[in-house]
Image (tube, rainbow, N blue to C red; front, side, top):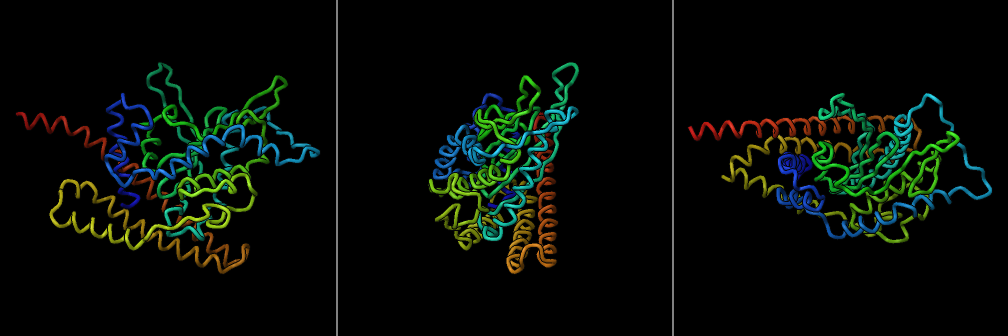
Length: 367
């Protein structure tokens, strides 16, 4: 199935999740999503790697980052303006992480384009939600960015004085974005906390170990690599904390990964399309008409990006030709993201409207 078809199925799950508040655990949530679409099932190898990595992404990561600076070198102090709020500091961290993610995705996608490991990125955005249940209606602010492969997503969410990193199946992204599944229902992959000492000094902690802004580039590479490791279902211990080189598919990350057979996928897709056209469930075909159209556009954009990335490998970084191609890639990615955002909004609105119509339709039938 295509990306938009999967999002539609995820949206159906999100709507049902709102109506069934008792289903609150992530395990149940994944099971519900897979019931709607068996193609959303999680590879056991990916699940095993995710569990192994999550166990390492606390104190072990903090100690590793802390050890990158030699003991005889004075670590840079974090200078904070008095007027800067904790949330603004969190935003700065996420902005710097995102800048690294964009650079890493650009280089990685040159080899990953056309595979299930191709990275789509969403630059940081501010989200505000008013709590109507409290009389003074406080506004909860969240700042977040995201990296997404075909099967998994890495989501970075910033709150007042904390940055929470999640790795979730792509089928759960819409439910997570809509708060149908809350942060308390999904185990954190990593947390970065901002603390203030007695003297007013600001420090950042990962797994209880102090770190600085200078640790963001290696941290971004590790998190980026973690997403690829989980998505590929392939990981060797040698890949962890090994070096700070740009993650390269098949060389220093996801070694042994074998791309899925695109021909069999195309055949399956064609067969699925012919079945729906040949007298299948008309209602089901109708509800997927927009997602199918978007999947066609998605495939065309994917081919365009593949062509641009192939052209990018022919030029040295910094040359006018390389800069021009990179600008085209950025514009295409931005366009792609806007289509994705528009489809999510359409899905949410359409399904909410359908849910509102059902009671009226049933009442008319009874009359």
